[in-house]
Length: 139
Image (cartoon, rainbow, N blue to C red; front, side):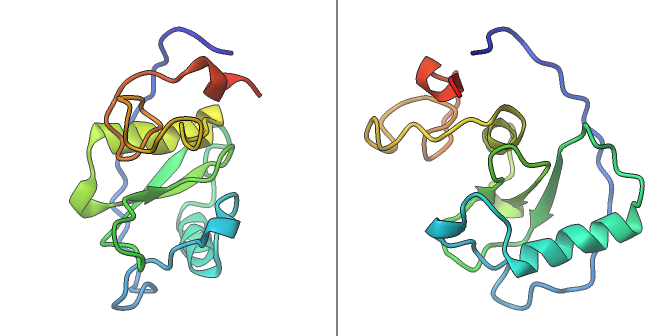
């Protein structure tokens, strides 16, 4: 379990990747794949690594995409992973913190333990702010 404050340095790199996403947006990882990236996500990550071959192994990267192919999806970052995706239309500090919570801190969503959308927990949907519950931080 962790407690306390964490500091993240934010750097914005303007990288405009050729349109690998097509008109439907970034393909959504289905519910069975929430712990891994799909082929389209991997192509974005690979292209970024080619553009920036010396990525920091201790850094976390979020790609801002126009939209996901699945309506209503605002972000995706597998737990314990370094790369994630967020939509431009929903981009705010809470969404970034929600996704980084998955990647950097291995946080789970609050549901199904509590009804989805019923708390102000950072890991609830929609990301409404708040703190991580003890049950989320125990590995």
